[in-house]
Image (cartoon, rainbow, N blue to C red; front, top):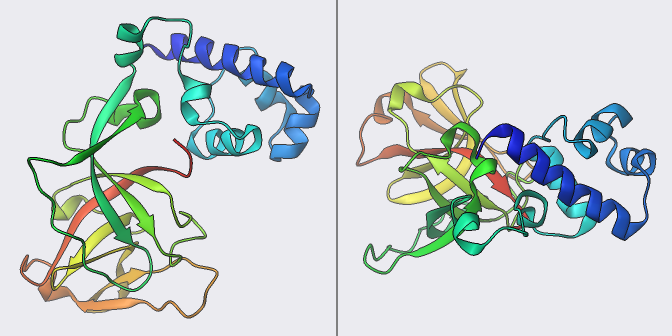
Length: 225
């Protein structure tokens, strides 16, 4: 689906919600703490909101992201072209490191994600999704969110990436900080709870897959789908 078509579909859906809730563009702008000109451009189909703004809209109107992004007037076969089906690998801890239950590759669950939400990754066949369980990243990704992650080569992970990593076969979700402490790779929480601490791992073990490895970088999250 082209960006122009996506903007038209979103604009139509946003206008329906604005009319249904009897709210003005100015009022919506103030409620979301987003400039009037930006909200007006969304309403008029000139721009598409980014992930964080979309989440604000879905939370405000209490609707799924698909209500904002999908063309409900099209037939089901056309709708399916706008959906990405991803494997759903259970829960990832955003708190204390926790074991992830083994995944049966022959009976894995799946989840539907609107392709437009994945941006340049919409045609990537290596993405996977998980539920977030815990509050150690709640300033960025709330407990209960669904995340989509992309595996990368080790050298491609950058400082500040939110990653899924495993340490001694246990998994967690943290911010990757390779240069915070000399000689160590730090996995940093981002939480309202000061009780969550950095996890510092000797840099030399990061390349030993039996001890520490990064499974993927978070490219998208949502609290409602």
